[in-house]
Image 1: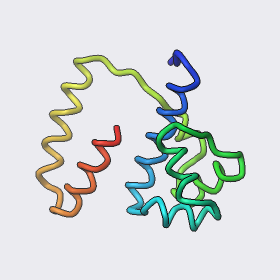
Image 2: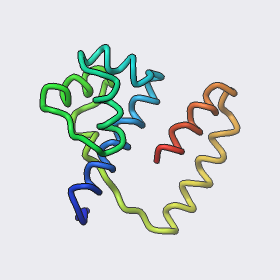
Image 3: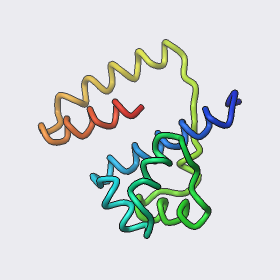
Length: 111
């Protein structure tokens, strides 16, 4: 997928970081502490304002238990694929606990 600008790239990257942080149920402050950086640094990354150093990038991947490459996976999907995904998510969502549903809602807001 071709991104139109550096700003768009950084925002998409930041959304991926935030999604993985929410999946691990960490706050920005907790993630920052584990990465040996400030909460402002994590906030800047998640909002697309700044890009992490290679050191922080690898720490993020380790702490969030993903490959660094996962942060760079930006995909385009068609309307038909989206409808299919929404149907599948709806079916799975009703089987989640209330706490799991709240976490999923947070993640979807990030996306």
